[in-house]
Length: 182
Image (cartoon, rainbow, N blue to C red):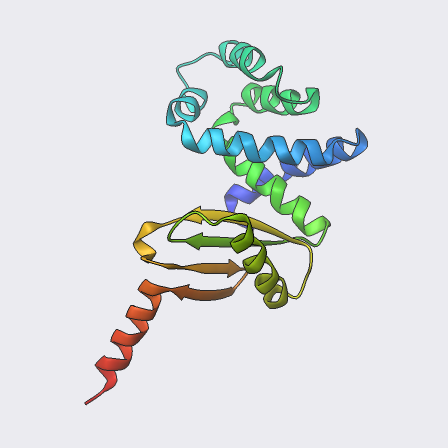
C-alpha cells in the first residue's frame, strides 16, 4: 500500500463508517465531490489550509465559518480532526480515498469520459450505455472532463480499459501505421 494510502485510508474508512451509522452516505458523497471540486479549483483555499503558518484554531474557525451551512456535522468533524492532526493539507487525498471505498463497497465502477467539447444529456446517455457494456456493470459513475486537444470525439477510461474514439487518437494511430510502411 502506498504511503499516502496508509495515512488517508484510516480517515476515509472511519468517515464512511460514521456516515453509514448516521444514514447520510449519499449526502456525504455528494458533499465530498463538491468539496473536492472546490479544493482543486481554489489553490488559495488548499494552500492556506495546508500552510503550517496558520494556527490550527484559525483553520478550524475558518472551516466552521465557511462550511457549517453546507456540510453535515460529521463532515465538519472530519475537517476539524484533520486540522487538529495537521493533515488538512491531505483533504483531497482523504476524500478521493473515501469515494474509492464507497464505490468498492457498492460495486460502482468509475468511468472517466474525456471529450473534446461538453457532452449534452443524449450524448452522455449513449456513452453511459456503451461504457456499461464494456465495464460489465450497470453501477457506473461518470466523471466528465473536457479536453479541446482531442479535436473531436472522446476517450473513456474504466479501470484498466481505455476506449479512444477521439480524432487525435485516430491521427496518432494513423501516424503509427504510416511509420510501419517501408
